[in-house]
Image 1 (tube, rainbow, N blue to C red):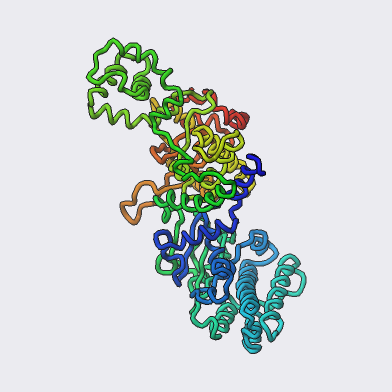
Image 2 (cartoon, one colour; image 1 turned 180 degrees about the vertical axis):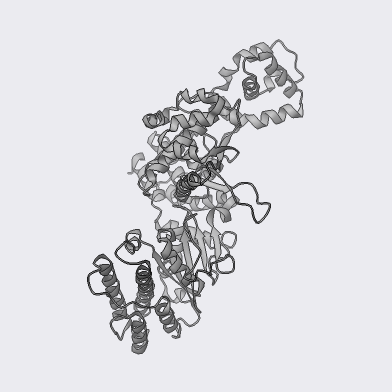
Length: 622
């Protein structure tokens, strides 16, 4: 019999492995629905934009011929009914970055990479042809003359069958890879960009099997290409011929250049391609989308262990602001003001006024009980301005009730909150659910009953810390991104704990330039762009453009997955101005920079950090 620890481990494997077969199938079936991505399968170029864990890679892999074959029940007859053939490959950073360096000129590197990308795409086509020949038991899928024509355009050894053609292409790939690392050896013959691809696809579509099918060339992790390499592939996209289109998977800001080899030519949306942002397209649908993905598997997990299946809304109960305030200890915080108010005659009985109301007005009038009581009396009498004042501050004041020394000074719970802090990232969402259930199991409780707000909050905090630790090794600038997160995380945590005297729920900032040459501004934008691309930060359009000459600005905030760990609002609310030099200084001198950004409230930087941030106390004190 499985123990609770075994069940918890099974959950982590189930939800933590993003390549799980059930998840691939479920995501693809949902992403294919018109309400989500109606143009994903259109016969035109498109780019699916999403971060790590957004579902981008899973969906693209499911569009490949292997994925389509699996989704069709591994029936070649069902597979043949599809109107497209997907050829998936992922851009490998060590491979493509090897095509650079001082040993050769830029022109030579361009020619070598053009030949290399021809070989890589043709390898995928040949691999599919061999796969299909085996599955459909069609030994002579392509004629000997067709194979000779293809091999001639690639400059590889002449062959008479598709299996030998695949071997010849792979040998040519090995040859060019060896050449770029040993420039003194004989240079291989180089093919013309695009010509072999068009020849191969034309030969394939000339057969009865594939005459009506469109070839999707699916390039994932497009951001790994160097800038000149993106220009080469952009050229292929711009001039893709009849019967094939490109489908790209790329992180936000990863498509750095839209130009082609013709310096006067650009890829323009929507004329040349469709840009599909996972976050924007899912948007308000993400809560329902993620619930459907999660519950599809949870039902099987519950059945496996013979437990009652709880819907996510029941498994992950939320809290109203008023209920949360009670849990945080608001009753104890308003004892004095409540005692004073017992002497008053109010139109609305004191017992009917929630303690959170008392706390909010008490906090808004520090050291002045009389003014606080007057505002509470007006609130109880139904004055509209006092009700608005309370509604503006009640969420922000939750952070102030219990103080930084308490184990939990703000709750993050409920399916809606989990969906929001995931920010349309299915990986984060599944990890939040799995970690919550694991904590419940490991504490000896059953997951056939609701998970406590405490366990949900601790789970959300753990996922934020886990990703914070992962970020450092994800990119060459990972250490800088982590330091930036720690600095701004601490800043927004201080602001959340001290909403009086500043903007309540300040969770964003706008970058402002300093200096005349713009170097600091560009350096700050560079590190922020890297942070956005790797899901450390998120950005949203700032002030709307009034004329075509205006420059678009962005509002930046930490990815909301970090809100529970740092303890600030996960909602996108008010913003502050941050200079470019402050962004750069936050990396090396966080405490001094935080003091500067707090301005006349700089003394707040000396407040104790929450318990969970003590791990980084040495850095934050620097």
